[in-house]
Length: 556
Image (tube, rainbow, N blue to C red):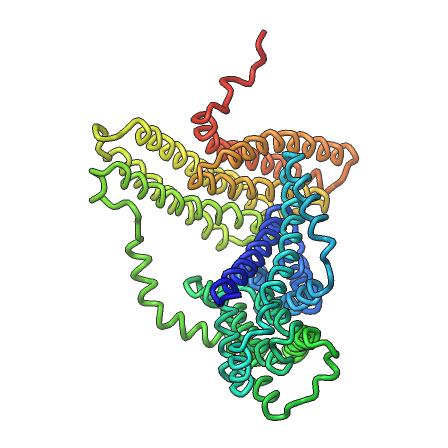
C-alpha cells in the first residue's frame, strides 16, 4: 500500500471516530442534557460527589472537554465553587480514560446491532428523545466501526521500512514524542481519539509500550489545553476551572514524563499486552492526578485565580472600550446591496438569539437562587435585546427596496418577524418571569420537589426548542422546522398534564403547592408563550415548501 493510500484510509478512520464521538455527545446533550445539568448542579456542592458526577457525565458525553466547559460555565455563573468545579473536571478526566478502556474490548458484534437498532428507532418515531436515543446508538456503532477501520488501515505499517526509523527516532527522543502527541491531540480536540490511535498502533507492534506511555502523557498535556483555548475570550470567572485543570493536568504530565525518563520504571504491573499497558497508564495517570489534586486543589484554585486576575487586568482597558462601543454587523455601506445587507441582518439576529438564549438559561437559575443584584443584571440584558431590535428594524427599513428580488423581500419580512418575536421573548422573561422570581424571593417560598421537576422539565423542553429555532434561522432546514412545530403541539399536551397534576396536589392540600401555586402556573404559561413565539420561526420555511396548512379548523 502506498503512503498516500494509507494516510487516506487512516484519515477516514480518524474522521469517522471524531464524527461518531460527536454524534454520541450531541445525542446525549439533546435528549438528556438539561436533566444532566440539573443533576450536576445538585451534586457539585460535595467534592466527592462532584468528582463522581464529573466521571459519569464524561462517560455519557464521551468528552471531558465538554464537561469542563459545562462546569466552567456553572462556576462562572456562581452556581458552583471553583474548588468543586476543579474536582468535578478531574473526575471527568478519569471518566474519559475509562471510555478508552471500554472501547478497547472486542465489541465487533455491536456494530451492526447498534446501527440497525438506532436507525430503526430514529426512523420509526417523531419523538425527539427517542430519535436522539437512536442517534446515540448509531454513533456508538460507527465509533466501534472506526476502530476496526483504524486497525485495518495500520496493518500494512508492519511491513513498512520507514515506520521503524520514525518510531526509533521518537523512542530515542521522548521530548519530541511527548510534544508531537500533545499537538496531535489538540488538533483532534479529543484525547479519546488520540489514545485509541496509540493503542491501535501498539496492538500491532508498531509503537512500543514505553514510547506509547510517553505519548499518552503528551496526549494529556494537549487535551488540557483545549478548554482554556476555547474559553480564552470568556469572562474571567468562566476561565478559572479550565485553567485550573490545565495547571493540574498539564504540570502533572510534565512531572511524570521527567520521572518516567529518569527512573525508567517496570511496566509489568500495567499488564502484559502492549495496548493494555498504554490504556492502563492513561487511567493510572488521571486517577493519580485526581488523588493528588484533592489536597492540592485549594492551592491550584488560588494560583488559577491569580493568573486569571493578571490576565483580566491586562485586558481591562480593551474590555472597557468594547463596552463603550458595542460592535454591530449592520454595515451601512452594504445597504445598496440587498443580499449583503440581509446577510448582515442575519448575523446580527443570530447575536440577538444568543442573548435571548442566555436570558432563558439564566432565568431558571434565578428561580433556584436569586438576589436583587442578579435580578437587576438579567433585566439589564434585555436592554441589549431592545437596542439590537431597534437597530435591525431601522436597518431593514433603509435597504434599497427597488433592487430587491421577491426572495429578498420575503427574507426581509422573515427577519423582521424573527426580531419582533425575540424582543417579545425578552419582555416575557423580564416583565413576567423576573416578577415571579422576585415574588418567590420576597415570600421565601419553595416549590415542592415534584413541582420543581415539572417546572425544570418544561423549561428544558422550551430551551431545547429555542436552540432548534435559532439553528433554523441559519439552516432553513425542513426537518428542523417540522420538529419545531411538532414540539409545539407536544408541549401543549404537557402543559395540560402539568396543570392537572398541580391541581391534584392542591386538592390534596399540599402546603407548598398552595404557597407557590400562582407562581408555578404563571411560569408554565409564560414558558408556553415563549415556545409558541419561537415555533413561528418554522412557519416561513414550511410555507415556502408547501408543508403548512392554512388552518387547524376541520372542514364542516
